[in-house]
Image (cartoon, rainbow, N blue to C red):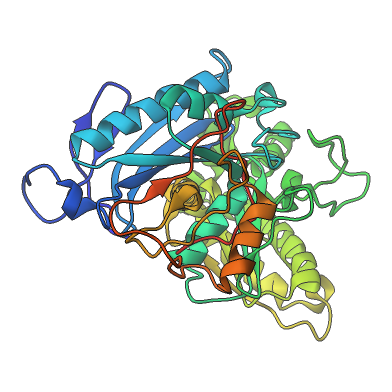
Length: 420
């Protein structure tokens, strides 16, 4: 995916992107979309920051924005403001935004309501896509952020062309997504994709989810910071403490990764420890899912040089991986920090009815709302068995967009297959 830099647009850090060297004229709808449909907006909401993109149907990011995740105003208000900025940035680039996808760090039900969100507790119980859809007047869908990242890496990134994939996002916590036999796995309640809350150390470190010893307490950026503060409080890690202003309690994961990049052996030893914990979780997932490839993304992947090799080495250790289990290929994510937002924008394509785009049609119930059952039934009636098939009997011209539910302002996140 081509993402060259561009000038700032607006006052919230929205940047435009252009193809080729030198200044270019604004993009026209014909040159930035397929069949005049326009583009979709994707917003990845994290515990500390939000990233949004405008994604053309050719997979090109034409604008993006990054803002902090607030505690006040509400997260929903901040997402609405970011979405509005991206709609304006798209228009400034000559692109028409037609749908919005949102990745949220927690359990997202079929109506888009956020449930357990250990790293975003202030947003639990809210229906953010409903708020955004009503405010922007655009069909809006939400899913787990790890599922969005998995969709992006599977369709456009490091796992492109693979059919059995695990994607792990390592940031403040650990998220993830699963592709099995060429389909995204969402689970009965659509809560699949939370491997960070798999217990790897019974009775271990308490987690925000209520359990003890969750994987994300040992193999995430938050876990790295906790281990570093533990060692710093015991009088070790002098170089890392210096980077934190001399206060052991102020040490964070980024101080460790910076020290490791500078060659500090204590920092690299800590990353070795985190890498081994990463392997423990991957081995557990491998025993259940038998993936062909494991893609590791998220904020901590910036330390991939010092993190993934210890994980790969540990996966060759029978004590970690067991005897007879083939070690999957473990690779860094290809799309970088924008993968979650790109995946959310791809998710939004489920809301677009294909006319000349080749996108899979979303099912509709009697109110024009996408639902899981209607989407599946629509595919069964038409005989389409794979995502990306052109819908039969559609008219020529621009795509029809499935509208928001009048009661919620959102299109429920149905179970239809992802589209390429």
